[in-house]
Length: 400
Image (cartoon, rainbow, N blue to C red; front, side, top):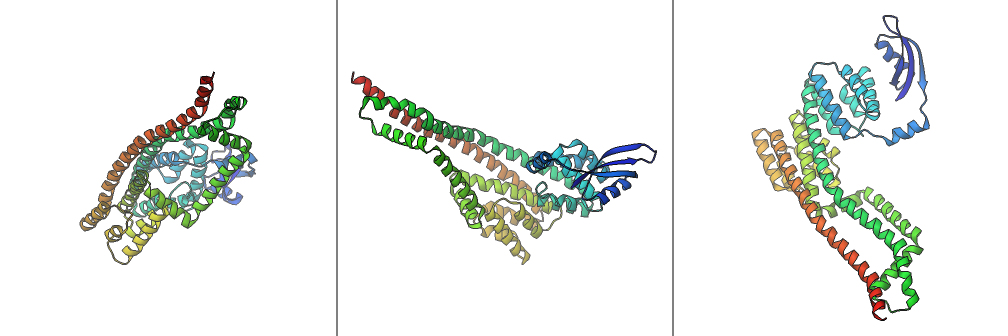
């Protein structure tokens, strides 16, 4: 999207200056004319190199989307025209989100539906989001859909923050341990151990290991960091392959506590999303395909697409869900009840609350398990350093 500065006259004869965003100069003129302005001049604004870099680095986040959806829901429900609501939100949003809203506004003013305009920004608005807006526009209940979307996004945001918040402490401690360990081995330990060489004393095995490791790391600092970078790059490339990602996901599922927590988090998002889609009038088949497109796990993505294919053949959703080893039995049982009573969306919404509660318990259990584990590892490391550094000093002093 290009930016143009313009000079125009209003209906009452006032001279106006400002900026307008458009894919081309011709469309920019057309947009100004639709605003009942007499265009005097339109000039392309060339972005600086810093603007281009900033645009690449910055990206609208979940907080921006949540605020946009909640405010849009309120404005549409109050009867405000869609284009006017978008103009107001464009002025209130931060620069990154404002640029996105501006492009959406241009498309809507050009005759596109809101769903089609949002669909051009897949990095900001998910397939689920776009599909729900499309369903709301088709059924004439866009305000209700936006309200439910805003509530759903707020729940996802709260839940995500709880999971991330619980992992901050362990991550900081582990990261600190690694950094301090490297600094000790490369810079501190060699100076502490220099005195041992002057006494020609017999050193304990732990001290010999520490000296050898520290000396090697000090002499090969570049190699050490090169190995770390190479391993990280290799792992990143491997996990991007279909087989590598699947193997890593299966490994995570088998890790105690973490694997169960990962499944419960996916179940929370899956049930909440499916319930929202079905409740908006979207068919089970389409809801499964949309959920598969939005889920960030290749195993569940493939499973959901397979379930959609079986439902398309006439099977109830509960059947493929029950056949998959990646879904808990309660999910198939409750979906079966929902299909029999015609209340699949309500059942799934209640299940999302159940899995969310289970996930929160899992996060608490993980935090409780990690803290003593970190202390044990830290104690072993400190104990080894104490033995390796202090024991030779004690032996030397005892000989005098």
